[in-house]
Image (cartoon, rainbow, N blue to C red; front, side, top):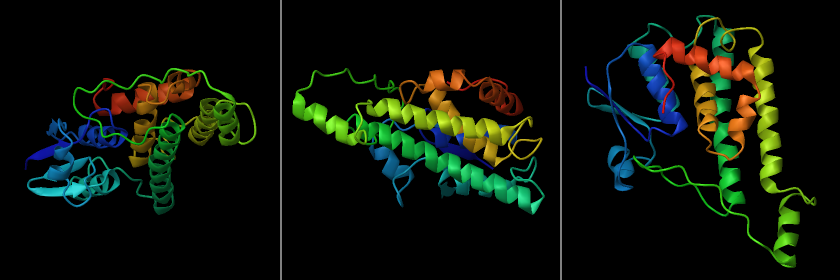
Length: 231
């Protein structure tokens, strides 16, 4: 069986799949896109990555990939044998995927940019410099901030901080979410925190560092997979 993971290393969904492969002790190749055309070539149906090639069968979508891995390589499992706990784990994994994308897109819109497709060797974009603005621009910013003079990034970081606090409460004293062993919920949350640690949204690194419970959680995920932080 040959396994190839196609996807940009700094994307959260690629990292989620990569960690799952490591957790299951599977040997695989990881190939990053170097041109925009690679996205369509490796993922002709949707043009999105990651894609996992399992001995010639290409599987799109990180969640579908995790389910496929669990079906073919059931040990160690990515879901609890308890149906209630497994349902909670699936819901948290889905929430982590959707919430990060929502916040990331909200940030990109706030700086006037859309989602860009990451390529191998790309540097993370630097935060935009503040521009001097006239009355109309300031009034537009006031409207976008909901009728306050708060900068959009300030409100966004406050929301992210609240979601991180929710995760701290969900985790409680357990080593992993809803269980004492790693699951797809942990991989989904880890992937979201991984991008914050890498500064995908300016200020998110500091928010994460201020929550040692989540920093320790990330270290446990890394220890359970390959024991080393990703790039």
